[in-house]
Structure formats: C-alpha cells, structure tokens
Figure 1 (spheres, rainbow, N blue to C red):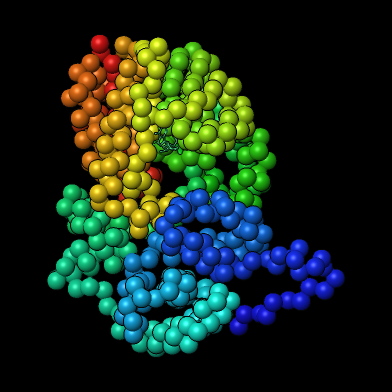
Figure 2 (figure 1 turned 60 degrees about the vertical axis):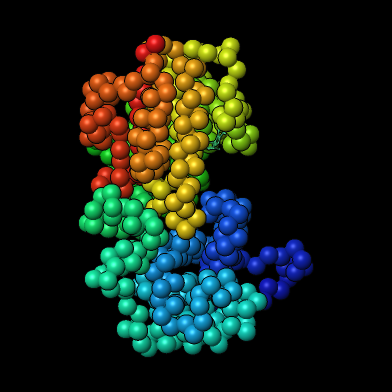
Length: 470
Ligand SMILES: C[S@@+](CC[C@H](N)C(=O)[O-])C[C@H]1O[C@@H](n2cnc3c(N)ncnc32)[C@H](O)[C@@H]1O
C-alpha cells in the first residue's frame, strides 16, 4: 500500500511549497521526457538535478535503479508487455507504456519489492500522471502477467538466434546481429550481457593534490570499500558510498576525479611530458584534460578545445578544482580547418572524438534505443574530417592519439586506415606504447588500444597512437 500524501499545515502557501517527489513518479517523468528523443538521459538528469537532490538517499537509489533498469531492459520488458496486451505497444500512450515498464521491471528484476506493491503503485502513477482512464488496463495486464507467467516466452533460438539473444539480453536486433557476425555467438552474448551491468565507480587519484595512500585515508569515512586497481596505478574502484560524491570533502578539495579505467588508459597512451605543448581537441567537460595536466606535472601548456562554450566553462571550473593551472580553453569548430598560423605547434594532440557511444551503453543505456546503424558511418566521416583538420597542427615527430568510446570497426581502425592513406606523413606509433607495461595487455597486433566491458570490466574504448613522420 502506498501512503496518501501527508498534509503539511503551517507551511508556506501551496504555490511556494513543492512536495518531496516520489522515486517512481520522478522516474516516470524522466522516462517520459526521453520519449521525445530530443535529449539524452544525462542531459535530462542534469536538468532534473534539483528534483533528484530533494529525494531521500533511499528514494534516490530507487530512482536510479528504476530509470537505468528500465532503459537497460526495455526490449525485454516490451516483449513481456506485448505477450499480455490486447493492443500493440506502438498504439499505447508513452506514459502508459512507461508505467507498465516500471512495474514489470520491479516485478521481474527487483527482489525486494513485493509484486502487489509494484501493481498498486503503477495504478496510483496512472492516476497521478493524467492517464487515469488506463488504470484498469494497467492493473489487468500486470495481474495477468503475475498469474500466468508462462505466457511470455523468449523467441525460439532454433528459429532465430538473433531474435532470441536480442530479447534475452535486451539489445536492439541490428546491434545483436552485427556483434554475432563479428565476435561469434558466445562473445556477442557476453558483450550484450555486460551492457546490462551496473558499471563500477572508478576514480583517479589526482597526484597534483595528493598521493594514493593520502586519498584513501581521506575517503575512508565516506566510502565503505576502496579497491586500488593493481594494473592501473592511481585508479581505484569505490563502492558503498555514504554520501553523494559531490558532497565528499576529498572531492570538493580536488583530490580525485571520477573517470573510468579505459578513459585513463587513453591519456596514458598519449603520454604527454612536462613542459610540452598539448592540444586536447574535443575536450568536453575535461575528463581527460585534468589527467593530461597531472601526467605533465602541471608544467607546460594544454589547450582544451571544444565547440560548446558551456562545456568549456565547466572544464575551467574542473581544472580549478583539480589545481591544474596549465589549461587554457579555446572554442572552435573542428568541422572547419583551423588557422594555418598555428601549424606545427603542438607536441601532442588528443582527439577524443564524438562517436556512437556504443562502448559505454552500461552508463548510457538510453543510447541503445537511439543509436542507428547508419549513424556509425556518419560519425566515422566526422572523425575522419576532424583528424584531417588537426593533422597539420602537430609538429614533425609529435604524437597524436585518436580515441572513441566505441568498439565498432567503422569508427575504429577504418578511420585510422583512411586517414593514413590520405596522410602518408603519419604512421602508427607502435613500439612506444608496447613498452608501457600498463598498456600492453590492451594492445592488439597493430598497436591499437582496445578495451571491452565483458573482457576487462571497463568501458569499451578504441585508441590509436600516431606519429608525424614528415
Ligand atoms: C567524446 S566527447 C569528449 C569527452 C572528453 N574528452 C572527456 O574525456 O571528458 C566529444 C566532444 O567533442 C565535442 N565536439 C563535437 N563536435 C565538435 C566540433 N565540431 N568541434 C569541436 N568539438 C566538437 C563534443 O561537444 C564533445 O564534448
């Protein structure tokens, strides 16, 4: 049973008072906003941040579980709904469909919520979110699903392996088919399964402010478990947070940054040295920029380039938090060639290019349902264009790393091969990266860095280290 909303006498007038949101209702609002297709989950969560912060810690945890869980398992949940519905899913109002997804996710994937509570709260949500006329339909469908669980069956693997695995792992059919073609059945299934896992929280010790033992001591009161990653010095998995990260004193003091292990490997592949001049093209919010400054001992110069001004403002804040003083920001559009007077200026360039994001579906499960096969080629063309515009800015003998959070060949080696064909004065810089013991386990025969969530328990990244030979 849910409790009726409490009366709050003696409070400011209703116009000023905003009742604390309920986790399920907040989750439904976010899922409904996503349906418009205009924003990513990250952008919506950021816009709704003040609402989320008003949730109790327990409700915030439930909210996250519901939003991410429904998005991860959407295809599977929709297949269950289709098995019990008397109308097609396409004909259902988005709010009704999302209420059903939320309830079924609780019933099928969350042990601690009694099924009857999931059904009752679904009916209440329908009333509160202006689809009261669908409350009977929602109630009947969910109760039938509880009474006759065997009515839903996964597609028969003997008829279509792709259909079977797509629904079993909640992966779009086109993506499942392409992963099976490329990796084989077992690896494709493991990769698809890994997209439904909750990714670890990985942090990078900011050596500009402290070393690892100091950081671990500073975090001890705020985090239950801290496990340094043996193969990656300065990287730590943390688990059992006692408060949100942004409220931890060690975070406010800039002692660490949140960054997945694979992203940390990319900056190591570039390996910038103190006193060099480095361009971080596609700097975004500066996740890698701060790491580059740390690797350079905060000596030299880093230009963080990005076309979105708001991101650069946040990057500058982040640099201040981390105590990285060698970073300057520059707004520019890499779709156009950069001024020629800057040619041959940089010792190193990082191009962390925009991509399909298919390597980070664990973190951005909404991307599963937005990504389309044809987008991959569009991204690849843009990546090739950016590489071409940045190539003249590297000095002869300098190093350029191209990276993407995608494991799709069109956005990986195909981009590099196309670039090398058009730029005979560049070559893959294989030997230097292979000499680094930290990187070696992740390098393939051609010297490309490749990480996979199902193999390495980190984000799926590709990175190539190139050098300018003439
Ligand atoms: C993969 S993200 C970068 C992430 C960042 N390097 C980090 O580690 O946090 C790619 C970035 O490229 C930027 N970008 C996209 N198109 C661009 C363009 N035409 N010119 C410059 N930057 C662009 C995006 O705004 C985005 O921030």
